[in-house]
Image (tube, rainbow, N blue to C red):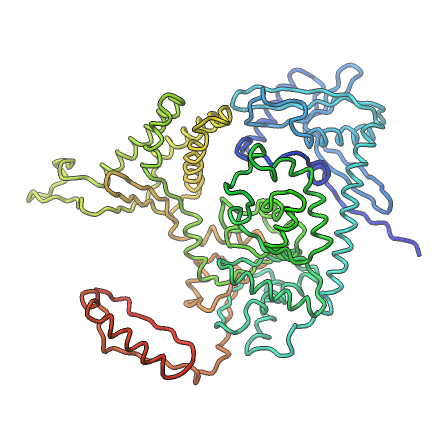
Length: 638
């Protein structure tokens, strides 16, 4: 029987990222570039080289067909520049960096060389060349300077190198393809893992299944005990078997519900399902070290991480189907890799990812490897969705305090005077804010009294709310960030490096959240003694949540308490394309007893006299019969 030729598309970037990555984990801060910085840097260098070389051709699109064994690869990419000088041709690659160019040597990043070498090979094939030159230019936008390295290669050298990386990728592709076929074959005949359905459960399964098919955002209110977890995961997995979605994200705020989701998948595994599932754990909980640091000079698991990670991923992928915290820790220790970064790398090859809300919704912690591009072929299952309202407001809010900056001043006076000046400016600006919003009677102007001489301004309150963004403060903070970035890059290893880095990230988070500021926000000024906190508070996160939900194909948000429906479907980002569904409680109302005791006062002024009575009444009630009890107290405490 003749074996079928397998054809697939692959970009040069994907090939290099998988097959050529090597070396240490490096802090993203030290090369922290915005996408626009990279584009502007490329354009600056390209314009310069267009002046230097009349023949310079920028943004050169190239494609090649590579045949390896039974695989045909349509390899594609875009070369930054082609230079023709006399009889020589150069393939030019540009990398924009915030790093000091003095710290960059030829071996700085082998992935950069891999990329330009593959481009050079593709160019040689297209134009029938037997040899070619390559140029790798690093450009620093802060200094507006560049550093260039050059190499020359024969076609055979480039061919051998490109094919060696391609073979690494194909070897993994074979493994993934075989797993995909095995997974799909197990999903198609998969039945509900239990002999019977709870009340309303079968209907909910069909509703979620149809929501995925229709690319809807669905809000489900279903009482505790209806089996919401299994009723959402099961139809999502069935949809995956039909290629409607490629990955499931099960998002929750609690560890216990992550375990419930894991058990639901295990119940289906017992019925013949083959699927790779992962529980993501935070960096702080995952880290092997006493102090969480990803600097290779301080962590043996970060040092040489990318030299070992491919084998670690292959090992766990072949031998495990459920990547739990304990399993990841075991394999991370075995291969001496960072367990948190390891879990992120294995997530790319996981079919179901069980994780906290913040991995999708928090702009400071989201999984960029999945969510940089909208409309992914994903399904989001969001458990206990009523909790997401407050969590979202927190994720899209940020606060800084005057004391954060004033405490830094003494440390910076002699070491970083320019930074100290900017920090002093921030402190003074926040002092001005205090005077504006929290005036004492000594600060009041004449026109702040009414005609009878009474003060119009109440200076007793310690909190003020404004609809306006603190623009003057933000301008100074952004100046601080620019200078702090430069200082941190040049002074890695300084005794106060960690102090500056800490305040940098606080200011950075505040600045990033300010970019989201709109009529959905207010600014809260909170004074305590001589200190003031400034908080950018998101009142209405609906638009931001909707933008995140658009990153997938379909979503199901479920809880026992999503009433009123119109409020939750709005505030949780339902947008214009949503559906509501509710199922009744599966338990008989005869099993519920509500008893109201209004004979004891719980008012604050009476509590010291009624504590003992309350205890006696509760004890008397729960002693009558074995069962489950909940005790509620009135909100009125005055």
